[in-house]
Image 1: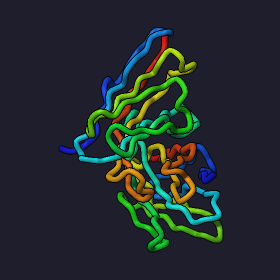
Image 2 (image 1 turned 120 degrees about the horizontal axis):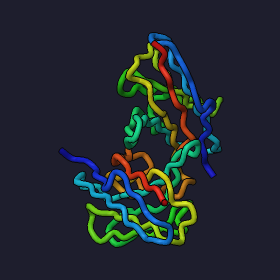
Image 3 (image 1 turned 90 degrees about the vertical axis):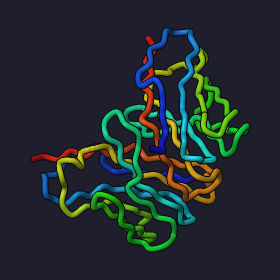
Image 4 (image 1 turned 180 degrees about the vertical axis):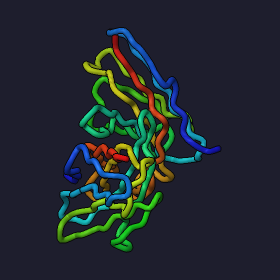
Length: 114
Length: 115
C-alpha cells in the first residue's frame, strides 16, 4: 500500500527563515503527491501537486516542492517564512495502487516566531 | 461563490444517538469524500462517492453510513455503533471520480463531540 511519512510533527522557524517540511513516500511506482495547508478549525487548501510533469513544483504563497525519486521524497520549502504561514501542513499521495483513494500524512504543525 | 458547505460547525451528541452531518457542494463535482481527522493521525477516509447513487467504503467505514441521492449532496450519518465518534469531520469533492490527480476541495469541517 502507498503511504506518506511526514518527519517532524512540529516545526518552528523564525520569521524570514527558510521553511522546510519533510515528506517521504513509500511506493515502488512513482505516485502523485500533494501538499495541503490547514488553518485552525478550517478545511484543507491545496498548496501544490506533483502529477509526473516537472519535478520542481511551484505552488501558492511562495511554496515549492521537489519530487526526488531517488530519495522517495517530496519536501515542501519556502525561502522566507511569514507569520501568516503558521498552520498545519499535510502531505498526501495517490497513485495506481491506492484504489482511487488519497492517503494523508499525519501532518506538521508550523510555528513562525517573530 | 462556488464551494463546499458543511453544517453544523459544532455538533454535540449524547451516547447512543445517531447524528447526520451535512455536506453540500455547488462546484458540479462528480466525486465527494468524507474524512475523519484526529490529533496526530492526519485524515482518514470514511466513505467516498464517484457518482450519484454509488459510494464505497474507505479505511474506517465501520459505524458510519452515507447516501448520494443528489450530485451536490453527500450526508454522513454517525451511528451509535461508532465507538469513538468525537472528531473533526471534513467533506471534500473533486471534479472527476476515479481521477488520481484531481485536486480535492475541502469544506470547513464539523466538530462532533459526544457527551
